Length: 128
Image (cartoon, rainbow, N blue to C red; front, side, top):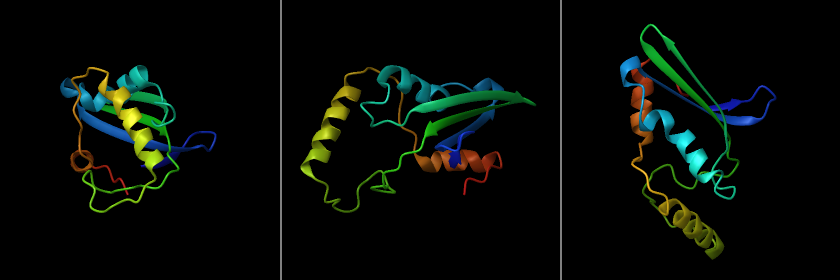
């Protein structure tokens, strides 16, 4: 969800919760691992500003605060549904970034937003 830092900087807040014994893996450390391995990918990955975790009554809560991207969203779906009419330089930059990502071994897998939304609803978070 959109947020602001204590100094008013636009940011993006990601919240996750899970039973304490299941609080690990891709939902927990993916952003930290990516930050350590890739940095900001030459300005193409939002900086991770802060992380915080807490445990309450057997539930672990994890919060990540990242710099908010001020670029427009190109697609609301992971599968492009229309031609984006992007310049060749955009595709060249993307190919270079993907080459850097592909060079790093990982066991992480992508998690769809729908999964994250369902998880949020199960713990009573309203993300609108």
